[in-house]
Length: 207
Image (tube, rainbow, N blue to C red):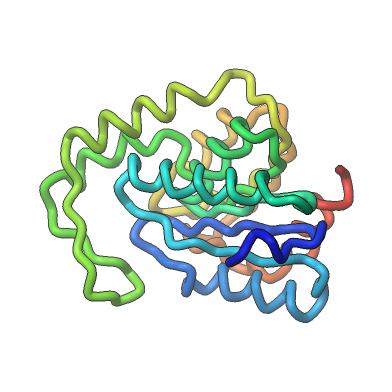
Protein backbone atom coordinates (compact mmCIF):
# COMPACT_ATOMS: atom_id res chain seq x y z
CA UNK A 1 0.00 0.00 0.00
CA UNK A 2 1.36 3.41 -1.00
CA UNK A 3 1.05 6.10 1.63
CA UNK A 4 1.10 8.90 -0.96
CA UNK A 5 -2.36 7.78 -2.15
CA UNK A 6 -4.13 8.48 1.17
CA UNK A 7 -5.48 11.85 -0.02
CA UNK A 8 -6.73 12.67 3.47
CA UNK A 9 -9.12 9.70 3.52
CA UNK A 10 -9.70 7.69 6.72
CA UNK A 11 -7.50 4.60 7.08
CA UNK A 12 -8.52 1.43 8.93
CA UNK A 13 -5.65 -0.91 9.82
CA UNK A 14 -6.65 -4.48 10.69
CA UNK A 15 -4.15 -6.64 12.59
CA UNK A 16 -4.72 -10.40 12.60
CA UNK A 17 -3.99 -12.86 15.38
CA UNK A 18 -1.04 -15.11 16.21
CA UNK A 19 -0.17 -17.45 13.30
CA UNK A 20 -3.12 -16.06 11.34
CA UNK A 21 -3.00 -13.89 8.23
CA UNK A 22 -4.78 -11.10 6.33
CA UNK A 23 -6.81 -13.91 4.73
CA UNK A 24 -8.62 -14.59 8.03
CA UNK A 25 -12.41 -14.54 8.01
CA UNK A 26 -12.89 -11.41 10.15
CA UNK A 27 -10.25 -9.50 8.21
CA UNK A 28 -11.85 -10.30 4.86
CA UNK A 29 -15.31 -9.55 6.26
CA UNK A 30 -14.15 -6.13 7.47
CA UNK A 31 -12.54 -5.40 4.10
CA UNK A 32 -15.67 -6.36 2.17
CA UNK A 33 -17.96 -4.35 4.46
CA UNK A 34 -15.82 -1.24 4.03
CA UNK A 35 -15.86 -1.65 0.25
CA UNK A 36 -19.64 -2.00 0.24
CA UNK A 37 -20.72 0.54 2.87
CA UNK A 38 -17.75 2.84 3.50
CA UNK A 39 -15.79 3.15 0.25
CA UNK A 40 -14.17 6.38 1.44
CA UNK A 41 -12.18 4.41 4.04
CA UNK A 42 -8.90 2.84 2.97
CA UNK A 43 -8.31 -0.68 4.30
CA UNK A 44 -4.86 -1.96 5.24
CA UNK A 45 -4.17 -5.46 6.61
CA UNK A 46 -0.44 -6.19 6.88
CA UNK A 47 1.06 -9.60 7.51
CA UNK A 48 2.24 -9.54 11.13
CA UNK A 49 5.19 -11.70 12.11
CA UNK A 50 4.82 -14.04 15.10
CA UNK A 51 8.29 -12.86 16.17
CA UNK A 52 7.56 -9.86 18.43
CA UNK A 53 10.70 -7.92 17.57
CA UNK A 54 10.08 -8.22 13.83
CA UNK A 55 6.39 -7.44 14.25
CA UNK A 56 7.14 -4.31 16.26
CA UNK A 57 9.65 -3.00 13.73
CA UNK A 58 7.42 -3.61 10.70
CA UNK A 59 4.36 -2.07 12.34
CA UNK A 60 6.26 1.02 13.46
CA UNK A 61 7.60 1.46 9.92
CA UNK A 62 4.08 1.12 8.57
CA UNK A 63 2.60 3.73 10.92
CA UNK A 64 5.54 6.10 10.56
CA UNK A 65 5.15 5.87 6.79
CA UNK A 66 1.51 6.89 7.00
CA UNK A 67 2.17 9.76 9.38
CA UNK A 68 5.08 11.00 7.27
CA UNK A 69 2.88 11.21 4.17
CA UNK A 70 1.75 14.66 3.11
CA UNK A 71 -1.98 14.00 3.32
CA UNK A 72 -2.66 11.47 6.08
CA UNK A 73 -6.27 11.28 7.23
CA UNK A 74 -7.60 9.83 10.50
CA UNK A 75 -6.38 6.33 11.37
CA UNK A 76 -8.25 3.67 13.33
CA UNK A 77 -7.06 0.24 14.45
CA UNK A 78 -8.84 -3.12 14.68
CA UNK A 79 -7.13 -6.19 16.05
CA UNK A 80 -8.06 -9.76 16.91
CA UNK A 81 -6.30 -11.84 19.59
CA UNK A 82 -2.57 -11.04 19.29
CA UNK A 83 -3.58 -8.29 16.89
CA UNK A 84 -5.46 -6.75 19.81
CA UNK A 85 -2.22 -6.49 21.74
CA UNK A 86 -0.50 -4.81 18.80
CA UNK A 87 -3.40 -2.39 18.39
CA UNK A 88 -3.04 -1.40 22.04
CA UNK A 89 0.71 -0.99 21.69
CA UNK A 90 0.27 1.20 18.59
CA UNK A 91 -2.75 3.00 20.01
CA UNK A 92 -0.75 4.17 23.00
CA UNK A 93 2.30 5.09 20.94
CA UNK A 94 0.43 7.07 18.29
CA UNK A 95 -2.71 8.05 20.27
CA UNK A 96 -5.05 6.15 17.96
CA UNK A 97 -8.48 4.66 18.74
CA UNK A 98 -8.72 0.89 18.50
CA UNK A 99 -11.27 -1.91 18.58
CA UNK A 100 -10.02 -5.11 20.22
CA UNK A 101 -11.61 -8.49 19.46
CA UNK A 102 -10.93 -11.16 22.11
CA UNK A 103 -7.52 -9.54 22.58
CA UNK A 104 -4.37 -11.06 24.05
CA UNK A 105 -3.56 -8.87 27.05
CA UNK A 106 -0.15 -10.21 28.13
CA UNK A 107 1.07 -12.54 25.37
CA UNK A 108 4.35 -13.27 27.17
CA UNK A 109 2.38 -15.46 29.58
CA UNK A 110 1.29 -17.96 26.94
CA UNK A 111 4.23 -17.71 24.53
CA UNK A 112 6.52 -20.03 26.58
CA UNK A 113 4.25 -22.94 25.63
CA UNK A 114 5.29 -22.42 22.00
CA UNK A 115 9.06 -22.03 22.54
CA UNK A 116 11.06 -24.53 20.52
CA UNK A 117 8.04 -25.88 18.63
CA UNK A 118 7.77 -25.77 14.86
CA UNK A 119 4.85 -23.41 14.22
CA UNK A 120 2.91 -23.09 11.00
CA UNK A 121 0.31 -20.47 10.04
CA UNK A 122 -3.30 -21.50 10.47
CA UNK A 123 -3.98 -20.24 6.96
CA UNK A 124 -1.91 -23.04 5.45
CA UNK A 125 1.18 -21.25 4.12
CA UNK A 126 4.34 -23.33 3.94
CA UNK A 127 6.22 -20.87 6.18
CA UNK A 128 7.46 -22.24 9.52
CA UNK A 129 8.37 -20.39 12.72
CA UNK A 130 10.18 -21.32 15.92
CA UNK A 131 10.00 -19.01 18.92
CA UNK A 132 12.85 -18.72 21.42
CA UNK A 133 13.14 -17.58 25.00
CA UNK A 134 14.48 -14.28 23.67
CA UNK A 135 11.19 -13.73 21.85
CA UNK A 136 9.32 -14.16 25.14
CA UNK A 137 11.64 -11.63 26.79
CA UNK A 138 11.10 -9.18 23.93
CA UNK A 139 7.35 -9.50 24.26
CA UNK A 140 7.53 -8.89 28.02
CA UNK A 141 9.56 -5.73 27.36
CA UNK A 142 6.96 -4.51 24.85
CA UNK A 143 4.16 -5.17 27.33
CA UNK A 144 6.00 -3.04 29.89
CA UNK A 145 5.96 -0.09 27.47
CA UNK A 146 2.16 0.12 27.58
CA UNK A 147 1.21 2.71 30.23
CA UNK A 148 -1.32 2.25 33.00
CA UNK A 149 -3.86 3.72 32.88
CA UNK A 150 -4.29 3.58 29.13
CA UNK A 151 -4.15 6.93 27.39
CA UNK A 152 -5.99 6.25 24.13
CA UNK A 153 -9.60 5.25 23.39
CA UNK A 154 -10.60 1.57 23.07
CA UNK A 155 -13.62 -0.64 22.51
CA UNK A 156 -13.31 -4.19 23.81
CA UNK A 157 -15.34 -6.88 22.04
CA UNK A 158 -15.11 -10.16 23.95
CA UNK A 159 -17.05 -13.40 24.30
CA UNK A 160 -17.10 -15.38 27.53
CA UNK A 161 -16.95 -18.64 25.57
CA UNK A 162 -13.43 -17.83 24.31
CA UNK A 163 -11.62 -21.15 24.66
CA UNK A 164 -8.15 -19.67 24.10
CA UNK A 165 -7.99 -16.51 26.23
CA UNK A 166 -9.71 -15.64 29.51
CA UNK A 167 -12.06 -12.75 28.78
CA UNK A 168 -11.72 -11.57 32.39
CA UNK A 169 -8.12 -10.53 31.73
CA UNK A 170 -9.30 -8.19 28.98
CA UNK A 171 -12.20 -6.91 31.10
CA UNK A 172 -9.75 -5.93 33.81
CA UNK A 173 -7.06 -4.54 31.53
CA UNK A 174 -9.48 -2.30 29.59
CA UNK A 175 -11.40 -1.18 32.65
CA UNK A 176 -12.88 2.25 32.09
CA UNK A 177 -12.96 1.76 28.31
CA UNK A 178 -16.03 0.88 26.26
CA UNK A 179 -16.73 -2.85 26.60
CA UNK A 180 -19.10 -5.31 24.97
CA UNK A 181 -18.76 -8.74 26.61
CA UNK A 182 -21.17 -11.37 25.34
CA UNK A 183 -22.24 -14.73 26.72
CA UNK A 184 -21.17 -17.81 24.78
CA UNK A 185 -19.24 -17.47 21.55
CA UNK A 186 -15.64 -18.54 21.07
CA UNK A 187 -12.18 -17.20 20.30
CA UNK A 188 -13.11 -16.47 16.68
CA UNK A 189 -15.86 -14.14 17.99
CA UNK A 190 -19.12 -15.45 16.63
CA UNK A 191 -21.31 -12.98 14.79
CA UNK A 192 -18.58 -10.46 14.10
CA UNK A 193 -20.47 -9.09 11.08
CA UNK A 194 -22.89 -7.34 13.50
CA UNK A 195 -20.11 -5.00 14.57
CA UNK A 196 -18.46 -3.97 11.30
CA UNK A 197 -20.49 -0.77 10.85
CA UNK A 198 -20.48 0.18 14.57
CA UNK A 199 -16.67 -0.23 14.50
CA UNK A 200 -16.43 2.36 11.74
CA UNK A 201 -18.60 4.76 13.73
CA UNK A 202 -16.49 4.27 16.86
CA UNK A 203 -13.17 4.78 15.09
CA UNK A 204 -13.97 7.70 12.82
CA UNK A 205 -17.14 9.51 13.87
CA UNK A 206 -15.94 10.54 17.33
CA UNK A 207 -12.66 12.15 16.33
